[in-house]
Amino acid sequence: MNTKNAVLTTLLLFFITLEMLIALDYKSKQKELNQKRVAIYAQISELKNQIGYVGLIDNFKNAILRAEDSHHIDKASENLRVATIQLHKIELQGGLILGELKMPATRDMLTAYRERLTLLPSLLDKNTNVRELGHYLRYDDKPSHLEIEAIYQKVSVLFASQLSDLLDRKFKLGFLVMVALLLTLVAIIRFFFKKQQEALELSKALNVKMESHEIDMARSQTILLSVMQDVEKEKRQATTLNEKLINKNKQMEQFIYTVSHDLKSPLVTIAAFSQKLQAELVDTLTEKQSYRLSRIIQNADNMELLLADLLDLSRIVQQAITTANVDVNIVIEQQCLALEEAISEASARINIAKNLDTVSANERLLSEGILNLLSNALRYLEPARPLIIEIFTTKTSSATTLHIKDNGIGIDSKYHKIIFGLFERLSTTKGSGVGLTIVKTIMDKHNGRVLIDSQQGEGCCFSLEFPNIAENTNTKAS
Figure 1 (cartoon, rainbow, N blue to C red):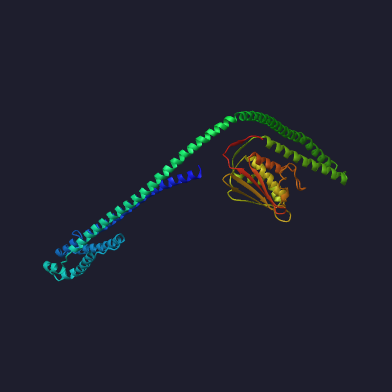
Figure 2 (cartoon, rainbow, N blue to C red):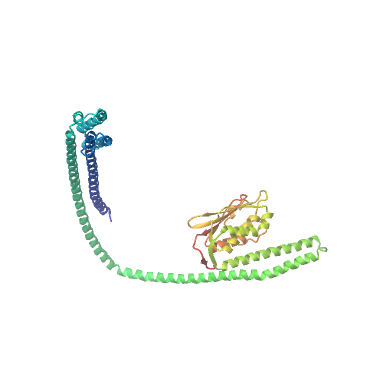
C-alpha cells in the first residue's frame, strides 16, 4: 500500500469514526438533557406535593380545624422545611438551564406560612374560634400554584427547544461528514481501479520478460540441482564424520574407564606392600630410604585418588539420569555430615540460608557436585582468616541457582576459563585436578551451567544453575 492509498484509507476510517462519534455524542447529550428534564420535573412535582392540598396547605388547615391534635402542626412544619429545600434546588437547577430562575410568589407563600405556623400555637392557646383563625391566617396561594405551573411549562418548552437544536446541529454535522465520507469512498474506488489497471499492464510486461527468460531459468534450475546434490553429499559426509566422532568419544570414555579400573588394583597392591615394608623395616631403614618409601606410598595414594575420580567422571558421562524436584537442604546436610571431620579440622563455619529453593536435578549427582565444591572450599582455605562458607539459592522464571561461596584464597580471573578442564590444577595442595571437571560434567548432564565469581585472595563463589523443568525427566547419556 503506497502513501496515497494509505492516506485515502486513513481518511475513510476517520470519517467513519467521526460519524459514529457524532451519533454517540447525540445519544449522550440527548440522554443528559432527558436526565436533567426528569430531575427538575421530579423536583417541581415534589414541591407541588409538599405545598399542595396533600401537604403544607392540608396539614395547616387540619391544624386549625383539629386543634386538639398537635401532630398536624409538626407535619405542616416538615412540609414547609422540605418545600423550602426543593424551592432552592429548583431555582439553582433551573438557573443552570434558563440562565436565571426566581420564584418570588412561591417563596412569599412559604414565608407567609412560616409566619402563620409560628403564630398559630399562641392563637390556639387563646381559644380563638375557627372563623377568627381563618381571618387571621387566610392566605391566597393561587399565585404560587400559577407560578409553579408557569415554570413547569417554561422548562418543558426550553428542553424541547434544546433537544430540537441538538438534533438539528448533529444532523447538519452528520450530513457534512457523510458527504466527505462518500467523496473519500469515491476517491478510493477510482484509485483502486487505477491501480488495478496499472497492475494489469505491469503483469503483461512481466509475462513478456518471463517468456524471454525461460532458457535462463532452465539453466539456473540445472545449476541449483547440481548445488543441491553437492550439499547433500557434504551433509552425508558430515553425518559420517559426526558418527565417527561419537564412536571415538565412546571409545575414549571406555578407554578411560578400563585404564582407571585396571590400574587401580596394582596401585592398591603397591601401596599396601609399601606400607607393610615400611612397618617391617622401620628400625633398619635409613632416613633417605624411609623418605623414598613414604613418597611411593603418597604417590600411590594420589594416583588411586585420581583413578577413582576418573572412574567417577567416566560413569557420569556414560550414564542416563532421571531428575526430580530435590530438597537442597537435605542434600547440604548430608554432605556436611560426610565432611564433618574435615570441617572440624579447618575450623570452618558453614552458613546455610533458610528456605533454600528446590532444584530439578538428579539427587545423587547433585550430592556429588556439592561434595566436590565443599571439599575444594575446605582444601583451598586462607590460613590468615577463619573459613566461612555461605550457601544460598536464587530463582528466576527459567532457572534455579545454588550458590556456594567461601572466603578462601580465591582464583585469579585469568584462570576462570581453564579451571574446569581435566587435570587443571592451580595449587600444589592435594587433589586430582578432576573435581571441577566432574562438577561441570554433572551440570552439562542437567543442561545447566556452572559459573564462577572470584578474585585472587577474595574467595570463590561457584553457582550451579539448573533449568526449571517438569519432574521425572529422563536425560540420555552423552
